[in-house]
Amino acid sequence: MEYIEQPDGSPEDQRLFERIQGQFPVKYTDLYSHISGEAVSSDISAYGLGMISGTELQSSADLEIWVNVPDQGQPLYARGRVVWCRPEGVKSYRMGIRLENAELMRFSRVMRLH
Picture 1 (cartoon, rainbow, N blue to C red):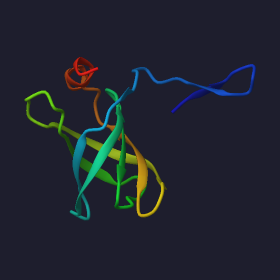
Picture 2 (cartoon, one colour):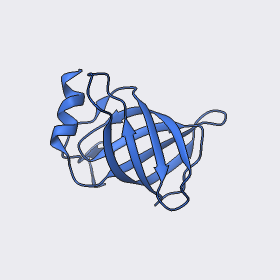
Picture 3 (cartoon, one colour):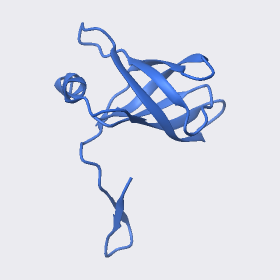
Picture 4 (cartoon, rainbow, N blue to C red):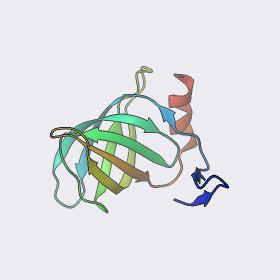
């Protein structure tokens, strides 16, 4: 992620695609440990996914991910890598996932809901 410092000292987010806020059920599987779990999305874009889970995932873990978007279609499937994971509350972890290959069709399904 690239940030540019502004005159007031705050960083400016340089994402190419807007992140859409939305809470959707997420299922994931760690490709190496084969551990599966559930989470809830916090935001999604063509390149990334924010999610909250009761399971801590290691940075750089490679995942298969299914996001259940309530548009009557099949769950969105993606592969991604955990970029960061930090505790949030009791037994809860917020994490950022970088998705492989920008999927504009995937992103457009989420945008239609907002």
